[in-house]
Amino acid sequence: MELLLAITAGTLYGAGFYLMLRRRLAQLIVGLGLLSNGTNLLIFTGGGLTRSRAPIIPEGQTTMAGAFADPVPQSLVLTAIVIGFGVLAFSLVLAHRVHEMTGSDDIDEMGLKK
Amino acid sequence: MTNVLVVPVATPLLTAIILLLAPRKPGLQRWISFVGSLVMAASSVLLFVTVQKQGILVLQSGGWPAPFGITLVADLLAAMLIVATGIVGVAVTASAFAGVDPVREASGYHGLFQVLLMGVSGAFLTGDLFNLYVWFEVMLVASFVLMALHRTQAQIEAAFKYVTLNLIASSLFLTALGLLYGGTGTLNMAGLAAVFRQREIGTFELVLAMLFFTAFSVKAALFPLFFWLPASYHTPPAAVGAVFAGLLTKVGVYALVRVFTLLFHNAPPQFYQLLLAQALCTMVIGLLGALAQRDFRRVLSFNLVGHLGYTTVGLGLMTQTAMAASVLYIFHHIFVITNLYLISGIFLRLRRTTDFSALGSILREHPWAAAISVIPLFSLAGVPPLSGFIGKLALIRATLAAGAWWTSAIMLVVGVLTLISIARLWDESFWKPATVPDRASMNWTMVLPMAGLAAITLAITVTAEPIFQLTLRAAGQLLNPQVYIDAVLKGDYRP
Image (cartoon, each protein chain N blue to C red):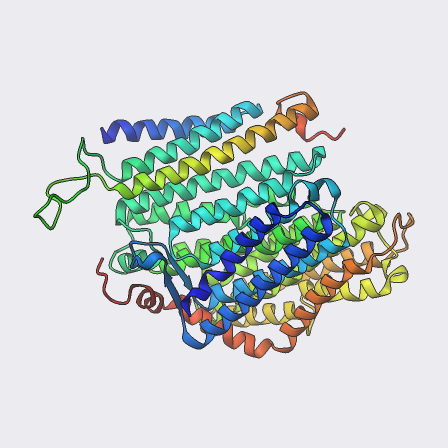
């Protein structure tokens, strides 16, 4: 499972960077989204994966028995998702304004002065 | 007394909330923002005095002991930078009394500015790397909006470059954090420092170091990742440019210093050579870029990039005097560059542009404004006896003491390039006869914050010796991470 998630995260990074190198604004923004989601997946996987085990110490014991997923990265991912969402929304608005101004979503058109 | 750590972060937040709730009358909003900044500056001075008396100050928020909760830490470096933030905040909010673009003011300029200040102070004070990421984002989102509030095409274009590159850097930073947590099980800086003290630097640690290096180099606008800065900093209004130039890149430099003194302090020597080479390339390319420009703010942007090189030389050499000289340089540079961007506001008001073709005659027509501008300009150029000269002298002496002859030589050459660039700036914008008349009258309210910042530059010049002693102590703390670890972890945590 780790391998699958690692490959997925890698693909998201690769696709994200590829899209960001394109000239269309819409692709740039999708690229940004893919990149931030790749990062989130990486943090999530970094915390370890176990199936159906909550990190709660059973009554009468003092330590966890066996492997368990660390809950901290999951909360980190939650924070990162919220931040990523806000930033993505902002860049969409920015792209919309660029489109309103230049009537194009080509990055090279943006640099031309009226 | 440790609660004083929260005040510089909480005050801007509170001010921002009050600004949102208060009626949108420009006069009222300006006063609330200004008073909030004054309170923040006062609290930062109080924090600094406390840190100076009691050593590193630590607050475990909510009583969660480090490394489990979020820790706020202020050592001397953080405290000095917080004081600088407070003073810049006061100067820039004071400059709003001279008038802010009405569209901008109606869309919540003052509140956003306070959020930006909160992000900067939070980044300086946090003792947790994930928390640092969050403060970076707070700061960036506020700066994105401040930059894009206006609707001219140049500003939107600049904002897009700025947003994209900073988001890539944030993603790299976050990637490094994910890997770091997976590999060590903590993100508390002191906890990480304790873990890394017991580790050899292997492939995993080097990958992390390079990720942090790249991410923070983008944020600090260091070679070769600085292109977003000259492409964007010349477009926003003077006050916004001033706070961006003064504080935002310094947060990147601070993060570099923090991570590479605490976490990777036993990295292989090649790594520090890389940092040093980067610092030198930043200086040379930045200043060569400055010589090619014909716009007041573009010249300043490239000068800003070039001088950021000086601020990381100490990190490359890792000696106490070099680190102290770099900290001194950061401290002096914050006030000087903020002031120069504010001064570009004079040109924007009088001539509606900062292009050299429309500048000139300021010395003849507004001699007092020119006299105030001389101080930050020639301090940046490193003309004795001003603070820039002292910072450069300290750096060159430190590089000579460390036996880094090449570094000293390049710094001297860059010093000459800076002098040429600033002399040309002075000639083109203040001295030469202007071909176009003023399109508005001088506003003296505008000049007051500049005079204040110039006075601070003079004060740094006069008190250079005590301040250098202070930065020596700050550098001592940075180069001996055990002090930081002991202050935060209190000896009861074993990695």
